[in-house]
Amino acid sequence: MTEILKRGHGQQLDHIGIAVPDTEKGVAEIRAITGAHVDLHPPEPGQWYWSGAFLIAKDSYVEIVGPNPEFQGNHPMHSLVKKLTGPTVLFWYIATDDLKGLAEQAACAGGAVDHIEWVNVEEDDLAFSRYGRAILGPGFIPQKPCLIQWDRQTRRMGDRGISPQCRLVGLELFHPTANDVNPVLEKLGIDARLQPGISRMKITLDTPRGIVVFDNPGFDA
Image (cartoon, rainbow, N blue to C red):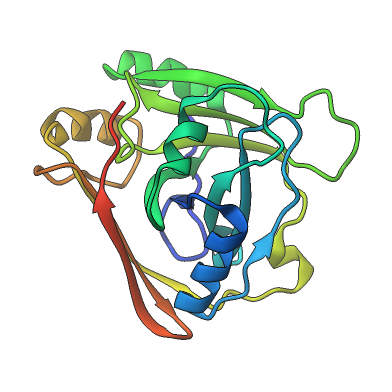
């Protein structure tokens, strides 16, 4: 069976995205709220987003995602984040060693893996990571994990001697279709479970500033 990778905090969460309407201002706000070191990355070529990150384990992080000011195309997520009024939990990822294999298993489990995209496959410059990513469909329900297969990770903060300053306390996921989604997650070996209720996402962190909670409605598409 395809492996779902556990991270240093003991859970399968690889990274979680907190969206902001302006990347630089959002990173500054998150730094002030948490007291954590936030590493602001250069924008990836051609991507709608620009992001920074801080560690919650050596191999797991919170990503602060805002619009890339150099992006010239149209993308629904680019439009969505620009309309936000503040930091908003928007998505979360688990990592697998075999994205194609997980897609096949999802089809057999009554789910689907949609929008598979391989990023920086042709890129020879080691400045950017190389990976495959997808959503666990059908459709985009942000409480369900997105999926990533890392083929090359550059700029890994844990590998550059930066220690986690924040600790993951909890991730809570609520959605009206929880009872339909959870059997698929279980069949795929994904530990997370959705709780029945109004669409909502909540992450709790232990930070240098104390316990910090980000809690907001989900964005179904």
